[in-house]
Structure formats: C-alpha cells, structure tokens
Length: 364
Image (cartoon, rainbow, N blue to C red; front, side):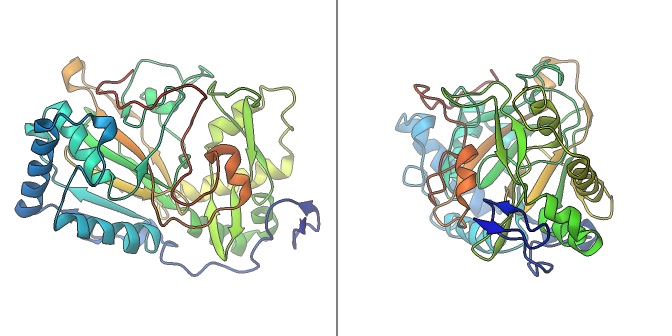
C-alpha cells in the first residue's frame, strides 16, 4: 500500500511523480508543422514486397486468422517496420502514419491480408470486442451513442479522446467520408505535464480509480464496469489509460459504482479541456491506403464528426488492429482488470470465455 504524496490517502496505485515528464512523447500539435515528421511514404520496392506477400497468402490459402510475420515475409520493409515500432512508437513520439498501401487495386481479402501481415511486425493481434474479432471494421452501423451496448466507432458521432485496451492500435483507411472524420491525436504525457504545472492537486486525482462502463461486453463474475486510474506511474514511466469520458459517465448507471466526486469531475474537465485545445492536438486527414499506428500508453485518439456518402459502396470504412508487441513497457497490476493480464507480449483485448478469435471481412 503506497501513500499518495499529494493526498496522503492510502491507494493501491503507485505514487504520483512530483515533476513533469521529460519524454519524446510529450509533444504539442504545434510541434508538427510538416507531415513528413510523422509519415513514411511506401516506396515502389516496399509495395512490391507487400504485393508478393499478399500473393503468397492467397496461393497457399492461408486463413486471415493465421497470418503472422512468418507467413508474410517482408525481407527489407519488415526491418524498417520493426524500427518504426521500437524507435518511434515505443520509445519516440508514439505515433506514425505509413502512407501509400494500394488499397484501390486490392480486394477486401487482399487489403485485410496486407494489413494483418504488416501489423504482425508490430505485435500479436488481440480481440477488439466480445465477438472475438481481431480484425475490426470502423464503420457506421447506424447505432446510437445512447445505446449502452454500442461502441462509438459504430456511429458517425464524434468520439471523445480515449485509449484502447491494448498497447498499439492500428487503422487502415479503405474509404473516406464525404465530409469530416479526421483523426485527432494528443500526447497524454503532455497533458499530465500541463495538469501538474497548473493544478497538481487535480493531476493527483487522476492517479485514483475511476469506473468505466464495459458497454455490455461482460465476462462471468465481472461487474458491468471496471475500475482503474487514468494516470499510472510505474517502472519510472507514465502510462495513461482513458477509456473515454462517455464510458465514465455511463458507468454511473450501475448503482454499485462509486459516485463521481466534485473534485474528480473538476480534474476530468481540466484533462478534457487541455486535450481539446487546438494548440495541443494534431489533426490527421486519412487518405485511402494510410495506416495510422498509435502507442496507447502515451497517445489519446479521437475522431471528428463526419457526413457519409449515401451510396453504401462509398461509405467511410477503416480496418483496425489491436496489437501487443513483444517488447512493450511494464504495466502495473491494475491494468489486468481490463487487459486480462500484464505479461509483456501477451496482454490486452476483450476476451470472453468460449468465444473463438476470428478475422471477419465485413462489419458485423
């Protein structure tokens, strides 16, 4: 049991670092004036390697659920992808966009194979929902944000800044919306630094547990919500978990969930206000063939509202992977409540008993 140095209250979470964090991941959106600072444009040679690997998957009739880096050989590009994972995502600014995958000439089967194959160089894919999907589809399914079993990515509604329940999240853009749908990211390490500088008492509040709604994806003997702090100081690193403000609010529907205090709400309001300051976040316009990769422990992501095309075949469509790298950072025990464990290389995702892993090729 460790006493919080600000509040002096017993807590199961590690102590708050009494300083700002000097880290490459502590950036402001204004720091990135040139897209070259966060993009890698695929070369003809790299695309040829990917094409060859996709053909091999088809010729050998390898199921998408079985694709790994041994099935998807990228002799030169694979080395570069590994460097992006280690030097940019895990030890650097925490995000990257790989641009130029030729999705316009790929079938959905080929696009999914390419995405799963490239993703395998970043980490092991894990389930993104209670259906066991390792390949997700970010697409409007006509669901309402007010539905307590709906996930916001299944609507056209603006998301709030959040993290996903895994180390790395990857998105591949297949089709863009008619208007809107920008990817918006912000450094959660910068947000902590600003909160500590302005209101250390409010920063300390986020080192205490909050309740997050599981949105109906509940295993036996689990509550409909889980509890975790937002800020975690562990192994001399700050890791941030923010299941999103909507899910904190909807967790209050459970009568046994602790009620939010005025101080907690004040801390969340400051956190959200800093995240939504245009000086702090970075907007990224997706193009078909873009792969965006984010290190969840240091980056929050969001999406702006969008208006979709009326034709079903033109609607905005992204593929998503949740990836667990073999060399991720140590995480505190409390993460096990959402990640299923904290073992490096074997954690994260939403896993319900008896549900097999699948890689569906359409949204469902």
